[in-house]
Length: 416
Image (cartoon, rainbow, N blue to C red; front, side, top):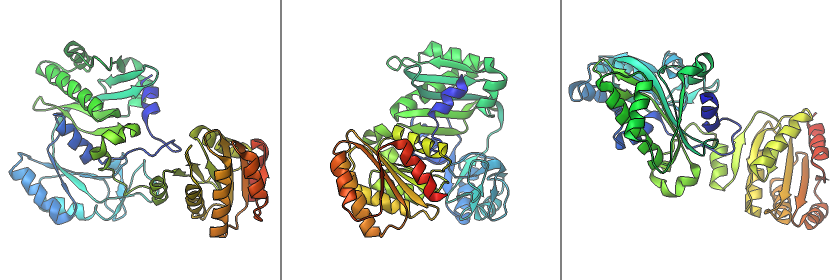
């Protein structure tokens, strides 16, 4: 189903890697670079700046009305509430002064939506865009799907709403078209898809052109998903990509340096950013048992078995296969910064990882931080005997176990 195709491409907590986050205006800037038709817009970072940009849009860019959109990395902005008291993160106005006044109630405040935390997300920029009248809304996404072994277009003539809801209620209205990554999308295939989206007349050719440009963008930026909702038609019979979400392949960072340098980290957990600086993969969670593990699969299994024993993991922390002693020390520093943590569980399978390196890192970290929390350690694999001897002779209060189930049960008991 289209729902599963989309869900498999989204980055949800707990996820195995931090996803590159771009604001809407940045994604639309990339689309514009690839010739995709978007709403003309400018970006402002203060009320006075927004007033000036609104004047430009109205007097020089042909706008009759302005749509003002708060920029955060979450959906549901239109129905959100600001900590300033303002309701709605998407506003319409024909008056530049009003645009500036509204912006002053957005920037510097947190916007709470159905997709943010209760505290909301801070707003640093707004998008001042030309308002367009939409007469038709469709949905279009290009996703990289393992099941098909390449790109798949997911589309529906019923856009502007949650695609999962459309797929559940009217699955016949959702189309999935696998694309040969070597051949791309042909003109005939693009036209056929435009007709499936129920565009008519001249709009069919326009839509087909936009589809092909979106695919060029998908390939050109090493995306794993390009989602446009709505992919719409204006009252001037112009096909426009009104809203966009782009996900990127983290493995392509080496050749997409310019794009990755655009990442907005203002809404990210500082601990996740600090971990990334040391090549550690950290995701904060809501429990009280900190986990230090090597490998995403083992990390997920560790969290599962903690929960099976009635405990709750405080984080996902994968130190990777090339971890060094200094990284283990940094990992402990991160774990102990969380005031909710009441015990630490180290679970290492030494295939690539040297257990002795982990043990030395643990000892150094404990000595430097003066760790007082209960510490449970399970080491299996390369150099595990030497590692266990180091721990046993360290003089530290470390509960060492051979079996995962036994170790998980012990760490849960510590926090009860």
